[in-house]
Amino acid sequence: MKSRAHATTVLLRSLVIALSLSALVACSDAPPPLPRLGADDVVLAFGDSITYGTGARPEESYPEVLAQLIGRRVISAGVPGEVTALSVQRLPELLDEVKPKILLLCVGGNDMLRKVEPVAIESNLRSMVSMAADRGVAVVLVAVPKPALFSGNAAFYRAIAKENDLALEDGVLKEILFDNEFKADPIHPNAKGYRRMAEAIAELLRRGGAV
Image 1 (cartoon, rainbow, N blue to C red):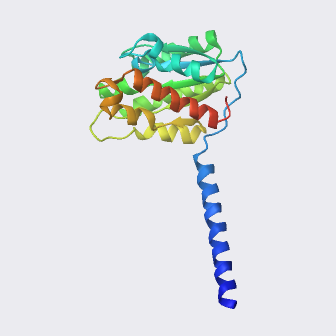
Image 2: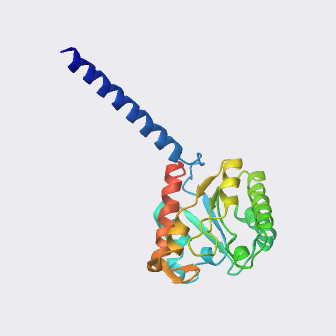
């Protein structure tokens, strides 16, 4: 009887530990809280050709699909070929004009293709995050993988997100751009890839409490 009671106690303790670990994992997976989007609030998708939707029809771009998924207005502000030095100049006027509640920031890929120094890319990203913060706009940072076989995302995306307590989507583009099923060409998603990207961002917005 004593050994059976001991076994039951050990089992209960193991279950408690397992549940506690599961809760910790769940908490660590949760993004920083995002502002709740009202029916009239706007999301600004800012970036380069990936935001623009190169490789698919306009209605298949990730901002268009995202708008359908979350039931909110998503303004697409993607300029193909743009590097972050130009993005820094373009963003302030857009923020003042659009007045978004949330900014989806997906830039840096063209810099890496042109071998711009990582410190310069990081500095430009930080400037754009600060521009949004100064205007009370929440930022969701979308990481772009380095353009090399079997490479991951540049480390500065995670560093910036951690230091500024930003929601970070750092998996979906890596998944898409290393799978031919989701690509229109070596550096752009196809319609299926853009939908996958929109779904991942919509899920992040939901987990952050925005929708």
